Image (cartoon, rainbow, N blue to C red; front, side, top):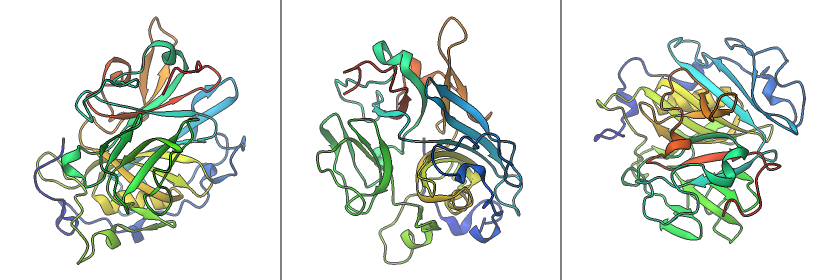
Length: 315
């Protein structure tokens, strides 16, 4: 849930986080070429715990994670990252009971049925519709009109996923099964672009603030990295500029903010060692870890093992 007052990044609670204070992460092992086997074993970047394998399929390791303090001048800021190759997993957008609501949906509020045994991981979607200008397209239906210039998470019928600017990097040309917009990009061309989107003369951008109007909070994002992998990030406590700074440090070429506040930022992998499947959080600040298996009020993205996913299990 978002607060009722706009995020004013120049009047944050606590010191403002500038992108120029970020640590250098050029030695990040996840920047190796896609398909490299060195990702989980290479030397870690400064301030990070070692990269660890979060999920594997029959084809090998598919998701890696790490945690670090990405902003040198602000050691209270902690970031957890999950990196995956979009060519090795099948992505799908699922539709929450309240966001977008409506229906009936093939991909409803939880992963169940024939698709559930193939589920590898899942993560949160974006803001409530009342807090964004952009649109939402799923299962052949435009629930909210798609707008040019907005950051867009796009999924094809074959499950390949990317992010870009609608009207520039992608359009609704019939090749996409899902298009989820959430504000403008915050990183583009490997640089922070929050200041561009927020400059005078540009329509007001609601970057989101905390329950009590505090803008430095737990925030999530999805980015396309220079190595062609995708990365989910949860960073906090930060304002929007601090989030962008942490993403640039982590090698992001493009990035869009996803949901923020409380338990909404959530990336889980699936543990099947017990009698039932259970979610395992990327970061200890995450809760309600079985939300995507039991039912979510908001939209989310699920990642599946293509080899285990039955034909026609997803739209």
